[in-house]
Length: 221
Image 1 (tube, one colour):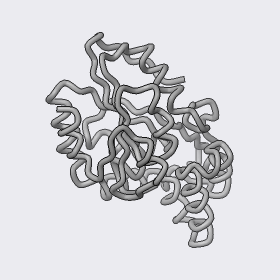
Image 2: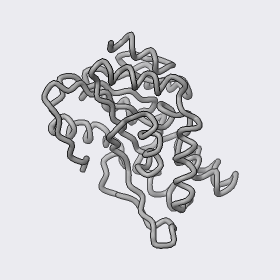
Image 3: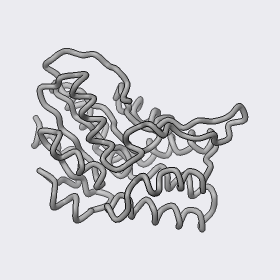
């Protein structure tokens, strides 16, 4: 379930995907890179097929993690990489949107512990993402299998929960993948993002499509 966060009824909610949107990287692929080129190539192909909608997210989610078995230290390193590879206009865009009364949050099929440094850097106070579990030695011990974004159709479920909780006056989602496009019918505006990867299905289905986050200003402000 998505976590509870109470706010007023005049909320304008802007929901960002993380990977290939707020940052250039796909976190799961970078965790795979640590395990060598063969593991990286295998995981990258699965990630690409899932984001293109060729296979279901749930068909690859657990499998990728079992192949990689990321350590806590690996996740921390990817957290820094998110910042190092941040979308060039992301910080200014989030700052401007907050000044204009929008409340940003991150909704991701990635991993909360890896995304936290980027969220802090951007001044985003809430992350809806998958928790990883580690044992006392920092070795991989599983993930939160109940979190909605671990499966196809999960992001709309999470947005529905957010809307029940927060009763926003307006809800906007922006992201690059098919899992983001699935939210189109449960938000007021779905903005596709193509700076890093332009996906035909997302571009065709989005209400609006941009290649730089600062273009959100013309859509929202």
